[in-house]
Image 1 (cartoon, rainbow, N blue to C red):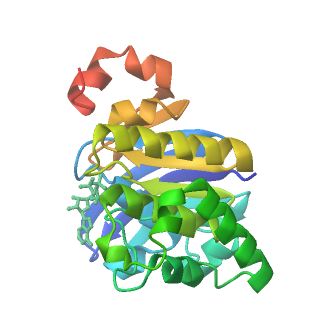
Image 2 (image 1 turned 135 degrees about the horizontal axis):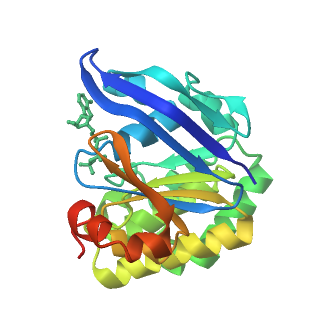
Amino acid sequence: MASLNVENLKVVYRGVILALNGVSLRAEPGEAVGLLGPNGAGKSTLVRAIAGLLHQYEGRVLDGKITLNGQDITHASALKVAALGLTPILEGRPVFRYLTVLENLTAAAHKLSPARARAITEEVFARFPRLYERRREQAGYLSGGEQQMLLLGMALLTEPRVLVVDEPSLGLAPILVEEVMRVLGELRREKGLTLILVEQNARAAFSLVERVYVLEQGRVAFEGSTQVAQSDADVMEFYLGAG
Ligand code: ATP
């Protein structure tokens, strides 16, 4: 189990666009935390900053600190962050579209011994029988829900301690959104994962997380328990459009 702490983070793109303006967030070991908020609020930016991916988007941390289990990862590379057990699942379902399902899983398992990779791949197929059925098909032909399951399977093959999942429900039918949330909850319980769930779909997030942060224009507009967020009319209406 692992903890994540973000303190007063400021992030700028191309030296001029201030996307995060002093964001603080923490996730205790084994906790599931939601990061909510409208388009452009800065959610993906926070994911990129945590995962060491900002420079790929011409962004950089201007100020503040990110620690993983007490270790400073503010300016760490994506490889370093991954080696410390934090795995991001980025938005837009970035599978290798021209590789088969099995090849995608194999690519994700590059850090593992062949025996360990085999064991976890079997676990992934047992958990997602549909992926097993389609293991020889190109990932680009999978449905959105299947691709999301493939990404979860790929993430499991990195043996994560912290999973940061960006908008898994995007474009999925409600029944599949429920399924994704259920699987994330199972994984968290079974593996003691710390989970950061980024969602525009607040209702979906509420079914999984116990605390939420609502971002608005690069700042935390609300922070509190899921229960308090759900009973706060301002949060529900203005920030989440779910009133
Ligand atoms: P969405 O749900 O639409 O992804 P978000 O809450 O994840 O929204 P971000 O994508 O983090 O928001 O964007 C935060 C701000 O940073 C926005 O004003 C956006 O235009 C800007 N931004 C994001 N990526 C870049 C980039 N690569 N270059 C310049 N500005 C960017």
